[in-house]
Image 1 (cartoon, rainbow, N blue to C red):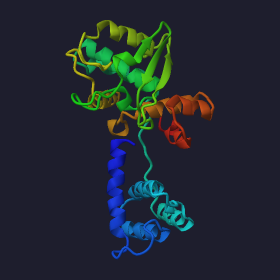
Image 2: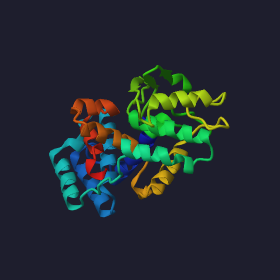
Image 3: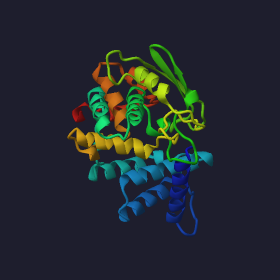
Length: 287
């Protein structure tokens, strides 16, 4: 389990236990207690999204205790469905970065970056994010120091017409089983990941830092820098940067794959999705 998920579950579990009857009577995992908790959260003005995360925590602790999951009870599901109908969830309107917008960002980088090296660095980072449908922390470091995070130089195998990338760990792979993905060359494209990788590795500084994507001084490219430069480029292109995030590349990969007519199985494979949640990433109406 991811550290952030564990901390969230611990907080939700404390809130849940505090909401049930003070005398401790009744089964802690009864659906009646869950309904009481939901009603308390409603009265406190909490969001449905928060309560749904709290339900995941309750289900987790019930499973750990060998108890039946009370969040799957008919009345609990109906209560949450009623809440959803009365207060519809706000749509996630982050827009996709597809191949066309990626090319636009790549073309505007010389006006934003401080050197030719930085242009090459960010062009490669954005190309890998799109063609690999990568989450930002699968690609770059979370911060300049501390835990490395992101792709390491040793995770890359470069061929003449493809790149193989080893993802050591991801949000949905906390056990570190790892996965290999392959990015094919895009001949004629200014955003070809194979060509950009070759050009970058030819000028990458010799540094002791293990990360693949590093600045000229050897320091790692971070997630905040990745997003900041992207949004500056988006603004230069005349779009509202508030509608874009680092996840827009992953959204764009799914939207592009679906738009090309690939099957659902192929689209899921592009982003390594295990469930039908990939459908939330297919947003042709926001291109």
